[in-house]
Image 1 (cartoon, rainbow, N blue to C red):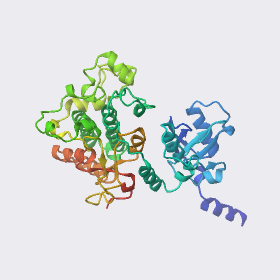
Image 2 (cartoon, rainbow, N blue to C red; image 1 turned 180 degrees about the horizontal axis):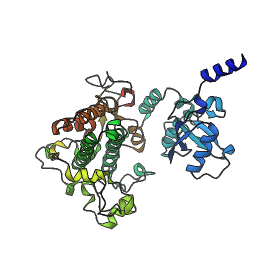
Image 3 (cartoon, helix red, strand yellow; image 1 turned 180 degrees about the vertical axis):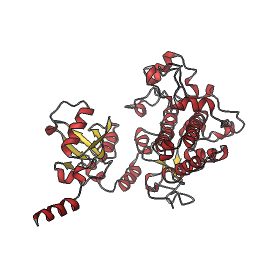
Image 4 (cartoon, helix red, strand yellow; image 1 turned 90 degrees about the vertical axis):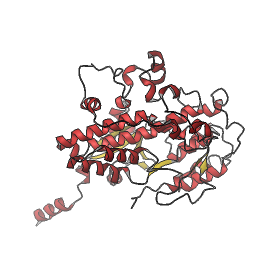
Amino acid sequence: MSLIANCFRRLTETPTKNEFKGYKVTDVNRVRKIGVACRSLHELKRKACAKLNITNDPDEINIYLLDGSLIDEEEYFSTLKPQTTLILQKPGEKVLTDADLLYDILRRVNIDFLIAGEKASEFLTENFKAKVAVLYNALNKDDSKTAFSSRGEHPEWFHGLETNCTSKEAYLHRRCQDRIRGYLYKTIDQIKSSDVFTKDPRARKQLLYAIAFFKMQLKEDHYFGYYFDRSRAKSEALEGADELDSSSCYDHCPCRLKWLDDSTYFRLFGAMEQFDDTDGVKKRNGRSSDTKTEEEEAEESCPYKIRRKAKKACIALCDHTGEFRCYGMWNEDKCSYPDKHKINPYRSKEELVLFSTWNFDHKIEKSRSIIPSLLKLASQGNTNESDLIEIYDNLFTMKNLRLVHIVCHDKSSHK
């Protein structure tokens, strides 16, 4: 009888302790983030220490959730969902929650309105969206330096920013490009991890052409950096302008990279080998020209035509002062809070920080709808240029994107 009971127990008990689960682990400063697959809390500590080059005994290491909760027992650890982000703390280090980080950023730029002092971190921990709204209301709306552009004119705006940009416009241009480039990376990852890409050679070739087209068209479109660049705000001067070429763009823009001399390139990006192929510069990656990746071959033989865009069509989403307004939730015509959901990151460092909580929301969802439709077309062998342009526009342009305040960003299914 005991044998039967033992077999029944083994068949019915939860197997999670013996299963690999993946987690994201970062240090207390959030400088590095790694992936760790493990079966236990102890194994997570051991592998994370090895990957982060931490020499401490794993038993001396603490693991926290982003809200500051300490994970100190295997039973609780086993209840965590895969891909949970965890913070690794060495002895003597202080763990900062997300709320702590936001408060610390604002405090370091000498923001005066946080009169609650250390109570602010407690204030921010719960109901984060509502608390961010309170911070917006408390911002100092001093416009005396809003029009300033250069580092010399407004040094406190640039304080603490790791950038070589010399103007506010150039910095926000680059930040917008980073957001759009992030969508490209995620799109490529989803395509390459699909069964269609890995198992169907014919579809794989079509998808490589699609990736090549996305890269080249984004380069032509300057990765839409002008969305955040107030110098591109709509005006009569832009109405009659010709095409936006590399001579009128910033040094960091991919459209100009192939024209940079080595000293300028090194100043912007560091060692030559560090540059990413994504922006289409092959001569600097240190690889022999005789060996080509399948993506490079796809770029050279891509059958799709790159569209040129008139300069007058490259318009910022803000006005000439740099003020942005929320477009509202994906299923509404406009924002329900027009007087509250507006921000000018050009005004102060504080508003620049809070602008990072604004997001582009895809009305037609990228992961759930757009990329699956591309995979389906490729699997059927029906990918054509008009379909690809439609997909590109839905992934990267304001045809399908809405710039929204955090309160209007609906992350649930868009149905």
